Image 1 (cartoon, rainbow over the protein chains, first blue to last red):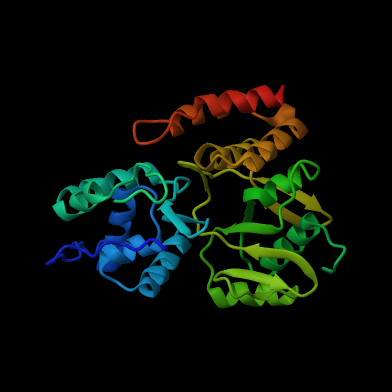
Image 2 (image 1 turned 135 degrees about the horizontal axis):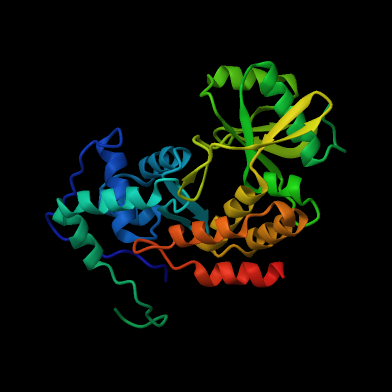
Length: 122
Length: 185
């Protein structure tokens, strides 16, 4: 049976973001990528409240700017680009911005990252 | 003239000449620079040129069209029906890891000059991909370039840069640098 996400809690609203990187959506995705570490479009779509196609389009723009890096695994794995010349400074800036928006931390802490044996009930 | 028998280096010189005719300054970087420095150690299928003077896209397209390259479906890349090598123009500025690059090397063929990362920076560029992505093909390329240009490689610069790249917001790359030195012999 394919994995499906549990629904978002009632009243969940996508986290706010300042339009610092051109648009609110670009900044929101950068903040999510930063707090989540490695992520992928479906996860970003879920937490940003945007469609996957809109997320993919914004990821393309951010990748062309060199801010993020994506690798084609089974899905498109997304991280901040560690070889961007200002990678450390960018990460520090985004983490600092995220501190001002508690929703990002809440999202990070709501995700189970540790392994779970296949077929084991949630 | 680019054709099926052209090597990546041939293509790079053709691109450099075409850019030059349009007064566009490009520097060869990435895996393609490693292939030019150490063709037996690493084979890249695309040439990455970082453009220095922010030219208009139409200008770049016109320069590429002169040598038979057209924009590909992948944004920013160019392809040619005459060769399997593609051309990409990664976003400026020219950098390796956290260091901006201001000094580059030049290779010449007749009157054509190909601007390219210096060998030590080329090794740094490949090592960055090994450090951050665990990419052993990049490590092998770094070792290949360093072996082929041993006298021009500044190991002390590589070591200091590795220390700078390691840090509280990053991983410790020292063991990977030692692995590079071990393979370099």
